[in-house]
Image 1 (cartoon, rainbow, N blue to C red):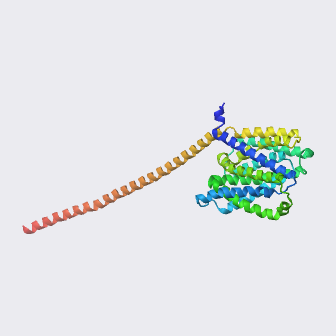
Image 2 (spheres, rainbow, N blue to C red):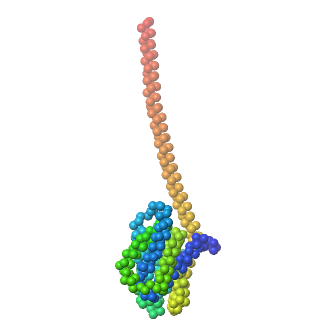
Image 3 (cartoon, helix red, strand yellow):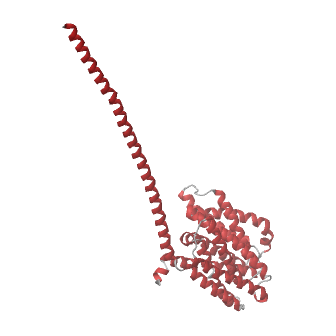
Length: 379
């Protein structure tokens, strides 16, 4: 039986703590969006514009100060900005049709999407425990949808099912955005990622606002009740976007999305105490599923780190063994080549020396016979 220290690593605890901070920020953005929806303000892209502008200014200034070239292609950031803007648009739009609690809970649809994308594109390996935790979280999603369909009058929206579908679509886009950010933050640079995402996100948002939300912005009565939620949403989103790359590099996109599911707990508190709404009993079942799934997924990272190290060591040993075998074959080939050349050289020397010796013997015999003939002539 493993100890607490073996089951929970420092990396896991830091990831959970940062994830809960980001979860509180997401809850505050949901609260701001819900307040604007109650005032009849329907400008989801406009809410995100200020966040992208802040990202471009703050991280863009740091990027200019460093004077470093881009580590990733610029058009990757355009695609990422487009996906991120539309994900925010769909999720914020959903607040016009369903409750804040449903939006928060249905975000867990991004988890299976993230797992598939990280497995397919980033080659991330998941053990059995991870899939069990994810399955429990997804079970909570099913409970929420069932509750909204059969208790629409208590769901806090004009069309709960439509709102749920918008959240699911937005969550899939969030999954694509998160996996892309994880890849870029691990292979490029965090400051570069935030600066370029802010730049292109602001440009795309401005274009979309000019087409879809121009008349809506003109009709808004800009009182303190409208300005404060706008500014609160932008500030919370800026802090959230600034912290996301850190958690992505530390724990990955799946851990990020699972950690954000605890924002549901905070959203229920807001719904009960701020909006004085009744919460369907099935939500509490979903909360339990989300909490259990998160702990099941997060636990056991020590074992996985040890297994990963063992796998890496095994792969290195195999590579070293193959290298030694190849080096041994090469040296034996060289030795055999040298031996063959030395044998052929010796054989050649033997063959070369034999005719020389024979020639010498023939020459001596001829000299002897010539000497004998000469002595006969003299006598």
